[in-house]
Amino acid sequence: MSAMISLASVSPSQDEGARIFALQQAAVVRNGAPAYAERASGLDALLRVVKRYRRQLAQAISADFGNRSMSETDLGEFMPVIAAIKHARSHLRRWMKPQRRSVGAAFKPASARIVYQPLGVVGVVAPWNYPLTLTLVPTIEALAAGNRVMIKPSELTPRTAELLASILGEVFSEDRVALVMGDAQVAARFSALPFDHLFFTGSTRVGRQVMATAAPNLTPVTLELGGKSPVVVCGDYPLDKAARSVAIGKLFNAGQSCVAPDYVLVHENQVEDFASAWLDFSERMYPAISGNSDYTSIISDSHFERVQQMIEDAVTRGAKIVQRAAPGRIGERKIPPTIVLHAPPDALVLRDEIFAPVLPIVAYRDLDQALAFVNARPKPLALYCFSHDHRSIKTVLNSTRSGGVTVNGTLMHATQEDLAFGGVGESGMGAYHGHAGFLRLSHARGEMTMGRFNMSHLVGAPYGKLTEWVTRLFVGS
Image 1 (cartoon, helix red, strand yellow):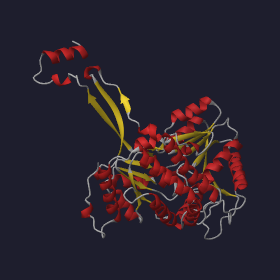
Image 2 (cartoon, rainbow, N blue to C red):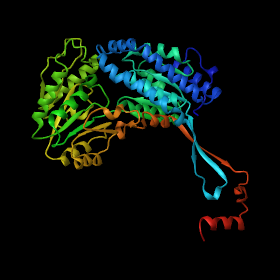
Image 3 (cartoon, one colour):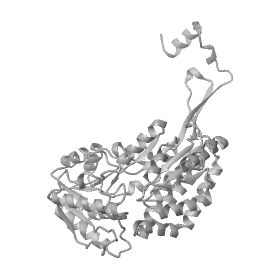
Image 4 (cartoon, rainbow, N blue to C red):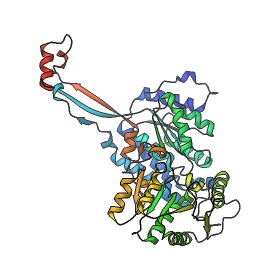
């Protein structure tokens, strides 16, 4: 357990995060690990309130974005959260069950087992792009593992955060689940608390800061950081089918997804055809941009301006920009589906994570060149491969490293509760979802019980013939 903070030492004028942390840590010491029934009832109650406030939450999220497609909120927020709760509930008893381990012959009679203990107090620093899913799924898995949870939601989604705080307050006492509101400075103080585990979702740049802030307390961290997730379209795969899948994955939430396709590698003879097909499907999905409630806005003015600067940077470096739809009205913060062709490798759209409906296409001569392009960059959170040729798929998967993969689709691996999800290298560390999350947020304590007639206590100094005999028996002469 991390270092204790005395409740008596926290005055009302001190940081709210420290006050709640002390409250939760005292509850850990006082109450110990919650039993199965307590964990299950908490998850059941959470499921009920998420369903009860579904429309209010969706409206709050849309208001925070300016416009967030209600259908995308259903698909990207409520489906994953409800699936996570149901999956945890249906497997929790088995996950919690101690696991027997074998005992070496030299130490028998004895028994050994692994017991999964709660870590204690888990901190969750949540992002703005999926303010419900990326707040509640780590929370669900922390609760399933028996922990108490403190949440720092993004300041970019204040309406959602305030409503979520009220909703969670209906279900959980403050010493079990609590939210801490505030800006980046509050987040920095939050990350510096001596949590038993800190879960952060966000950019690689901020992830480095979070890890450095947690280091003095030796707080273990799970970092889900995103990155430039590539798509490799092999020459054998139907171009229209690939373009449709990439359009769905790229334009969902206006590209503001950590696993959104960030750029596409297409054979040099198919670049123009792929670009045309991708824009065709984009138009079918979103016939209009302005006033279209299905087309999600960019989260803020600063993010909107950042994307515009990326496009302008590409143009100044000789890239070709292709847009068929008109931009959104002033104030809507809507960028139409955009193709970027012939961008040099040092263009911002090929260096930084885009997080918008802007898709660079990179031409390749052969698969080796495509894979070299991917491997010259930091390991991404997701990788997508389109091919029906098993050798090509095997080559792509074996020659690359990424957090996760979907073959012949986009985003889908990140939606599976029974599939570990997490980054590698600059795209993060640690996996969660389902059982992987339960294990990540538990301590696997090894417990050994010596049998009544165990003779191991006889093997000790001063060493003599018994020790020599035991050594010869198990080590050899």
